[in-house]
Image (cartoon, rainbow over all chains, first blue to last red; front, side, top):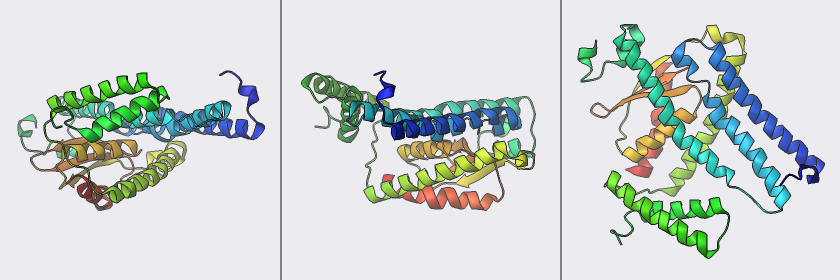
Length: 125
Length: 162
C-alpha cells in the first residue's frame, strides 16, 4: 500500500491538510507542557493531542487508505475509542500522585487543603 | 443464557470489534471473535457482578453530540491559551461538584468525558459524599462549571444508566 502517487490531487491535499492539522494540534499540546505553569496546569496540555490531534490524524489515515483500496477502511475509529478509554487512567494516576505528594510534603495552600477536605483524610492535614 | 453469556451486549460489541479489526466476515475470524467475546463476558463477571442496563438511546446520541461539540470547543480554547499571551493571567483551580450519579459505569463514562475535554481534569471522587473534584485550567466562575457538569453531562448519564 505504498502507492501514494495514485491518489488524485484533491485527495492528496485533503489527506495532507488533515495530517498537518492533527500534527499541529498535537504540537500545540506539547508546547503547552513547556509554556504552562505548574504540574496541574501542564497536565491539561497533552489532552489536545489525545483528542482532536488523534482524530485528525486517524481521519487522514482513513481517507487515504479508503481511497487507495476503493472501499471504506475504518478501523482507525477503534484507535480513537481505545485512546479515549485509556487516557483517564494515566491522567488520574498522575494527578492523584501529585496531589498526594503535595499534601505529604506540606505544600498545603488553599487549593490543596480544599482537595483534602473529604472524610477519612483528616489525619493527613 | 446468563451463565454462558452474562453480558450479551458487551459480548456482541467485543465480537463486532474483533470483526472490525480483522476486516473480514469469513468463518475463522467469526469463530475466534466469538471465543474472545465469550471469554470477555466471563472475565467481566469475575470483576463485577452488577451490570447496569443501558437504556434511553436518544440520550446516548444527545450526549455524544454534546461531548463532540465540547471537545472541539475546549481544544480551541486551550490551544489559544497556550499560544496566546494570556497564559500568565489565567487562574486555574479546583472545583467541587456534588454528584447524584453512583453507577460505576456512568462514573467511568463521565471520567472519559472529563479527561477527553481539554481544560478539565478528574482529580478525586469520594463515594461516601458523592463529591467530585475537578481541576479546571481556566477557572472563571465555579458555579458555571457545576452547572455544566451536572446539567449537561450528569443529567443525561442518569437517564442512561440509572
